Amino acid sequence: MQRQKEDSSVVVFQAKSGAIEQRADTSAETIWASQAEIAKIFNVGPQAITKHIGNIYAEGELVKPATCSKMEQVRNEGGRTVRRLIEVYNLDVI
Image (cartoon, rainbow, N blue to C red; front, side, top):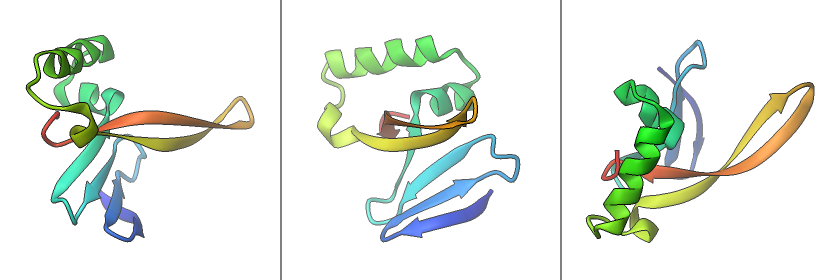
């Protein structure tokens, strides 16, 4: 992976192929990943991750405000730029 951009204490790493991107929060000593990225890490379907994260929060193992954040995802779809807010989870959830 190579360092792609840095914004204060958040560093973004991305493989040359662009396949997986991980965000490292150096001030909090953690990484951030979306549900899709977590699914790739563990080689499972995104639905399994959704269910697992739901159980973590429902059982009170972790609290969402401390372990989840929203980040804007920008990508090109069919020749147009699409912006979406996606939830990303810190290393405690991963």
